[in-house]
Length: 235
Ligand SMILES: Nc1ncnc2c1ncn2[C@@H]1O[C@H](COP(=O)(O)OP(=O)(O)OP(=O)(O)O)[C@@H](O)[C@H]1O
Ligand SMILES: [Mg+2]
Image 1 (cartoon, rainbow, N blue to C red):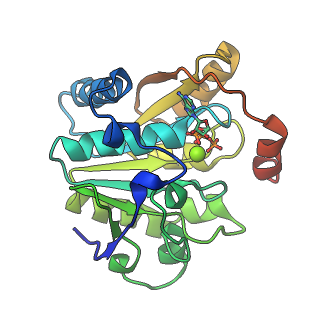
Image 2 (image 1 turned 90 degrees about the vertical axis):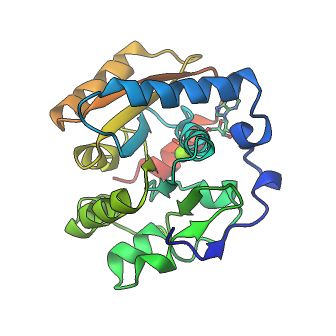
């Protein structure tokens, strides 16, 4: 679509895209089920922009967002994966592209969107990485420019999937949930913290978000929490 700059070597990246690599696996089938469920969740209004978020860090947002985007692309829909986690972005790692320009660049500077959209080797899938991490992510994401950008993208793509920081850490995802058609909450089954999930849901309701559903991620590995506090604890 917009993208002229190809993302390279995504398959050998440190973050494996299972839907791309093993499309017949049960996990890939689950991502396709999420895709179908999103389609059926709102019959009357077309869902074109979907925010992927979670209550707490490390739940599997980025993994879900990226694989869901691949699942959409594979179904023939022109898809954009946008990394709106301007604090701990990972899309540029997954697709092995540089992150010198991206979402933050286009919001702050007067650069054309063509400069930040990259085609991937996956047919129908373009990406926008976060760009350099700004000092004021929530401000950028709540700007008029961001709203305008999303409108532009939703006109050019069949589906825009947006990765974001966790809801209970910073306001970014809440801000984004106001300007997206629907929100998917990812939760790590192993943690299974219902109180936090409820708190996250309350925040989304306050923002008048359209909650499409919850993705139960069966992540067995434990993540180092201290590491995340470092990234998200600054606001
Ligand atoms: N179901 C799973 N099985 C195994 N590993 C997983 C699973 N889901 C996620 N992971 C791994 O756990 C780590 C965290 O996942 P991911 O980056 O998707 O979470 P996140 O919610 O985006 O985190 P953050 O809050 O830091 O943005 C990654 O290394 C990812 O590869
Ligand atoms: Mg992430």
